Image (cartoon, rainbow, N blue to C red; front, top):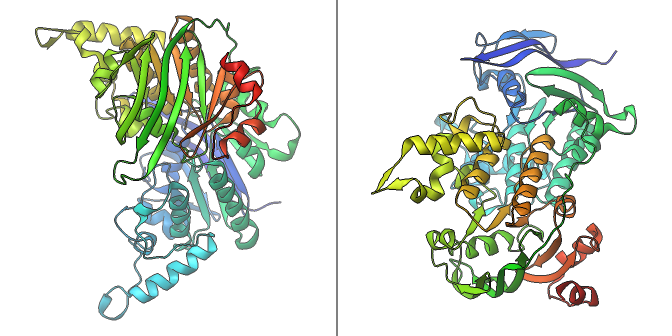
Length: 522
């Protein structure tokens, strides 16, 4: 019989008016990598907060059994003392402190008189960085490192606490393919060479199938089943069925591809870095999108995709910007965000929590934020009309919230994204640029977002999707542009595109016009 390092028995957690968890069962075998899957709002993160002491003993029902002993964690330090460490999706690092300072924050290496021994701190940090495969100076400020490296620093921080059970919440959601592969490889190494058990919460089912030994599915606060990943083929379909309660035979909803005349065109768009004047981030980029069309922009991290989108949207990024924009054949100027909105342009940011939403405000105010002029008379907003508009979008966008007065920060990621889209649809945008529109949301919510995109283009809107997931672009777009080092390196119809072709264009430095490109442009 395999030894279970963790058993969570009949865990029930209730908030005012909401039962978030109901008799949830979770068993984790010592030395395994255990996945947890479920839709946004299913209760995954709540369960891990119960385990780690964020929700202390006495605020929930049921038992946590770790190492064959019932535990009563009253705080995070209590669970960490037993070797349980959680790494949240939003990394808990202080950007202005060094790598070493972050690793040992709250767990300082002290010498004589209780003073911090900096030599010992940096030496131990160096050893921990070697264990996670990160070749960085321990004295480097964290703010100078990318997200992938910061994720490794979080794991090094966990290792400094003699971790036995490592919990990772959506660890690869903000990482590129190379960083994701490195992280998954590290989890295998920690398991095989150091015997560390891991729990991984993820919406990326291919990663769950690749790295996990077993996975537990949670739906609506209930445990549905625990699956042995080696049980055979069709694992991803089985997980999806458990997560959403039904089969999704096609992850990308079908639509009629009825493309009209050109609605938006960009020519020779060049953007310089905001603080490094000599550095060109976007170099003579040109593209167009037609009425009723979904156009994708593909590129590896750092290719300039987000910088291009933000610079187009009211010059929200960059300096010394040159080039031309045309809406319905007429040249437009968008020197600020208000002008961009006035001309029918919208940009849904990749970071909805920081830039896309006011998390401490309600659904109603977030939906109306970009188009208050439609609700105002003599400088006063008609609140009754504002509520009516928000209620209409709550229904049409299937935003799961009991009331539009609900604080947006309390919604799941998928429902937050629907609020973002509602905001820009209400602004009467003709062209919507969606930057990583499905990042960090589950497969069921993704399907709903794709359905919304289909409704938009069916109504004659134009949509530009920026995505790191090539299957998503191939499944939703009509045409795809590739970007590399700030340069548009290619354009092709989805009918001609493959992941291999796109990746080839995404990794070359100069644009090349092939016969296929010319045919597509014609």
